[in-house]
Length: 272
Image: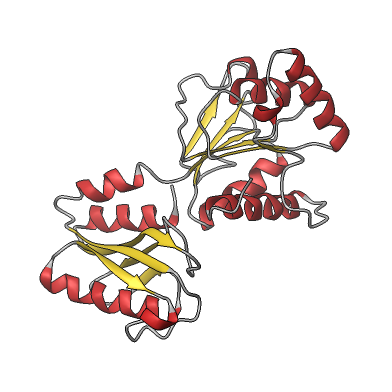
């Protein structure tokens, strides 16, 4: 569960209303992309961001007013210099921001919105998976940990993950799982064979991102086997492997940062 989800859920449980601002569409160059969120409490305390600068300030002003009006609507911000309407932004582009009053007594819209958040399925609960999970939550991904080893996939190691799953075998990796265009798949199991098994079951699925750890040699070998299984080069081209941005990462923590950086790039619409 993402940070905004946790905060909103906590406020609802306390019976405290709040306002949620969410970027729902962008055109051109904007500070943040679709899905960026800002949550504001009645006392002005805020969490998250829709982009910073005057756009952020104007969104915060409207959010505070919304506590009085209780009206939910979409605001259109024009960020092009000639059409700024006083926003004093230099990035250019347009941003549509939904500002919604969330009634703690009837939070259905908030619940529906955050059932559609970006969800990450991490296949492999080893050192890399453990380093990855908290970083992903920090940048508003919902996390699901999957492994066939109960000693690794458990709440003691992943106490704040949205879900922890122990499966019988990576040969049936997606048992009980449905993916869609908001699903991000990370394959970091303990061995080549399990990575191959998971990737083989992933290529025909709807996903936003597929990343698999491994050396270039390992990746080439797995791709060769998958082609022999009947998968096409076009399908394999969807995969980010070796996974992560090239930052010469070595430790699990450094690898985690490189992976999350790549996923942020994809989420912002600058992937393959």
